[in-house]
Length: 286
Image (tube, rainbow, N blue to C red):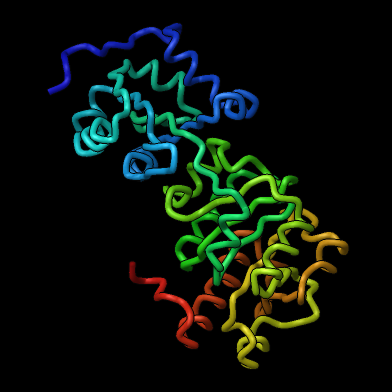
């Protein structure tokens, strides 16, 4: 049972100050640590292992959260993480959300070298080129995970995947599949193509229609989808690097689809085509 009073009651505690600094990118990069907030993210972090050992290294929890999520706290301790029972004000001070859920984990970086992604011969990859909004990046990562993608790659011009908003938007998916970061888009496309992956740009102005590509049976092979900036999409020089530029058809009166919705449509189209050809596991099973 948790003690009657928390052990950390001051926002000026050195441990609290160190955790709070991880909300800033420069401190995350220096320490190679990031924050995971809420029960779902902390649960996934506690169960994740990387080459350097356990991913979750520290957990801050209110007394109420420690009781409500006793299984998560236990998993954190089993993973070797230091568990701090903290006052609600301390959690609010560390958290980047308006309504904290009482659990904040400190995790080691878990990105995978791009060379390892290629060596695994992936069949479905999401490549984020110049995606700047952390919420969109995290949501696309979640979509890629749900569609059964084997990797997500973020170019050097894209947002930090360890941004707290991106971590929250991934809803735990950050801990489920390899993520490579900081890869120049030219090298990413070149490497994927050399690994036998067809590289498709998703763009509303594409000269190929996704429905037509599915009907033609061209979507069953290894595929990487390139998704561009939320406001201006993919520049011509990036589109020129890819094997084809594909648009999601708009059958109604909507002007366009947002980034995450378009990504979900494209990734699931590839996943279904790959399953039909016997090349990809079911996205509904493990």
